[in-house]
Image (tube, rainbow, N blue to C red):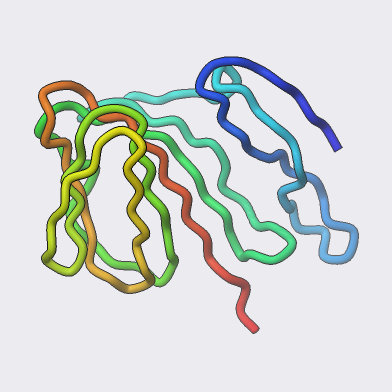
Length: 140
């Protein structure tokens, strides 16, 4: 197990390690600093892929951070079988779930249940910076 401490936004993440039984790459416990996560430009901001891999109990754990410009949306409203959490660090997002919109700012939290139609947009005058964590259970 590798544990590394760093400064920045303090993103906790995990590294891949081969699973002995299935030989698939699974996440193992570790910590990755913000400066270690590569960003890439998007048409409406920037994104940082923190992790996207299976775990011992999940088919996939995915986490990313997005910086979204004022008035922008990351993508059209959509639905999917995975559950996800949205956490706002900076700015103001309007999150719409099944047609009901609510604004959240720094520290705001949204839980997006499986198959609910959802989307969000930056309704503030500055960039919005937010974290998304999504998980897909293993099939039984």
